[in-house]
Length: 67
Image (tube, rainbow, N blue to C red):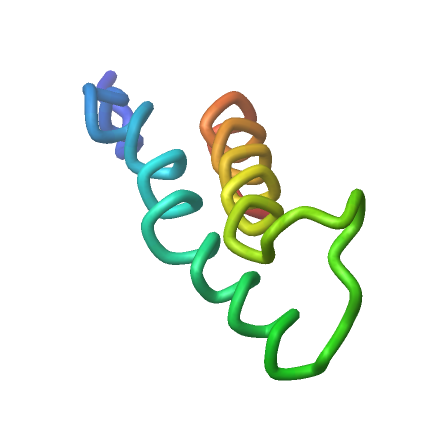
């Protein structure tokens, strides 16, 4: 009996991390700048966005889903 769920290949593992770094990081950084919010630890907004985007991407890759 076959299942409908495909096997997770390389992009299945790296895809969420790539999305977190390439899309979410700049979005988070621009959101902080547009809202004039202070960035934690006094760092640049892009560094905070990269850390948060990478963290979310790794969590999504480990869980296998975003939600």
